[in-house]
Length: 125
Image (tube, rainbow, N blue to C red; front, side, top):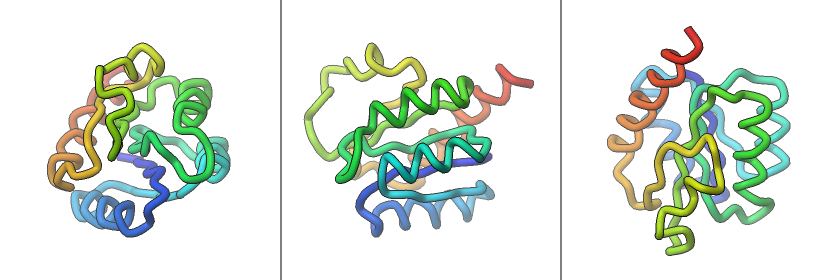
């Protein structure tokens, strides 16, 4: 599975990356909107783990660009705020599949990656 982590807090992104790589995923990690869109422009992606509140850039812009470049890629939004806690993120992002807190255990995040990644492969292949 090709996974892109877009997380401004490098230590958190690194924890997720190590766990997902141990599960056999190919994982890239970036911290900004510009880095994410540059990566998406030149790499195939199945799943994006995307912090809703980036320090540099807008998460929804990343999700929109991903939807354009990789329409079958699934987005798992992560947040440490209550913004969009009403579930409205699913109305704003067509490729959103999950909305979880930053405190979600890495093994739970890995299970979501496996589940939604299989969904993405099912629709494309």
